[in-house]
Amino acid sequence: MFIHVSERDPLRARITSDVDAAIERRHLHAVIQAAQDAGWVYRRVAGGDMLVDAAQPKARSAVHLVFLLTSFRLKDQVHIQES
Image (cartoon, rainbow, N blue to C red; front, top):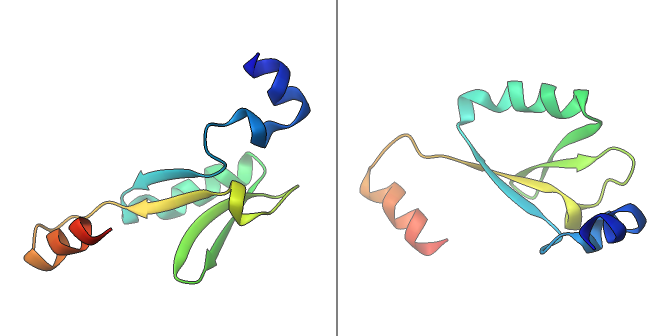
């Protein structure tokens, strides 16, 4: 069923329309390059980093990039709790 729906409307085949991917900030350039090689485009919109399909660049179907924290400061822990 997934393949059948995916062939006709890829967005409807997903459980959610967007995807969140956690990466280390130091890998951002490599992720952007790999995405470009696969037909995706990097966008920074309203303070958020995302990859959108170059053929259909819509935020609702984007891969949203979430950066992993490399510090365990109280400030960082509170940010995680509030997210």
